[in-house]
Image (cartoon, rainbow, N blue to C red; front, top):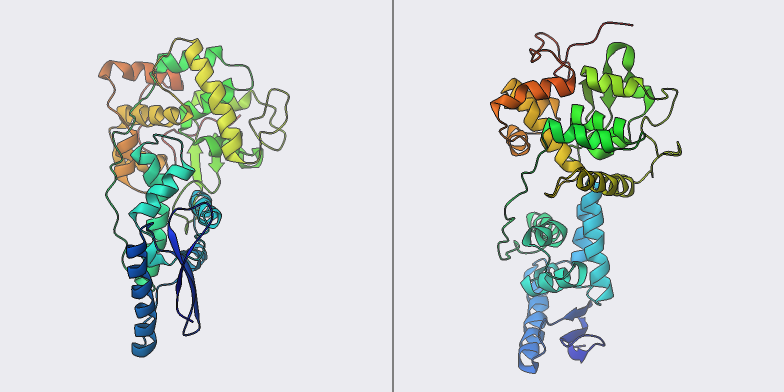
Length: 363
């Protein structure tokens, strides 16, 4: 039966409904104007007839292509963002929309529905536009739809905040006993918050001053461990913990942090920001700023981006360069003092240590 133009509740746009040559169609026309909706109906019918006559592939639905895309090993963040978009399409009765119908108007509507009012372009790009474009590129490569074309969003200026050793000392001094060792460890190693909170005693070798962070952040298809040779300050912070078994860093009552790093990380981040305000740091800071600080201090001591990328477990020198910021030359003695070093450590030759520090003497 031919396609019909119908109305759907909770939307101003006209919809197409019907079955043509055995292909069921139920999709938005993308317009609330009758004349344009009729043009869309005629064009959609013609597309289906041409595909049957000439053997052309019709555009698959976005949900179908997204399912194919997610069969590959994708990061948890990518899965979360894409599933959020798919839930929006289902709520908006667009779950059968074809990939070729995913246009700029639909992206704008999704951003308005899923993000807070006035969200920055960088947020729109990260949370909605990039996941959608990735799915459409996946489909275009396989001939299921056209190559996506959307307006360019600029990421804007990235924050370049970092902390001085003096500010780090003030934060640690004002931190409660269960958080001070955690903050010290991150300032001394540059560990990501999820890596630090997930550290288990079975991967700590205090006798050799070595820690292994398991499955650190990397490309989804890779698994990577990061080995750390602890500086004296980090070694002392761990040596003062109850090193029996289980998580190294715990809550004030001794219980483990939440298993979901997004929840536990947010809880620790809130505490960190409150402590930073308490000691008089007025600019925006977060746990992530600690990694920027470590990278900046590391580069000040070594002047070697390749080594920084290796020690920080970054996949590229460009990423290490983005995290490191130039510090005043006079700050080097303060960095050494904070890490408990007398002189800048030389890179060990002939061994892959995964860290910039020599192993401490065995107890």
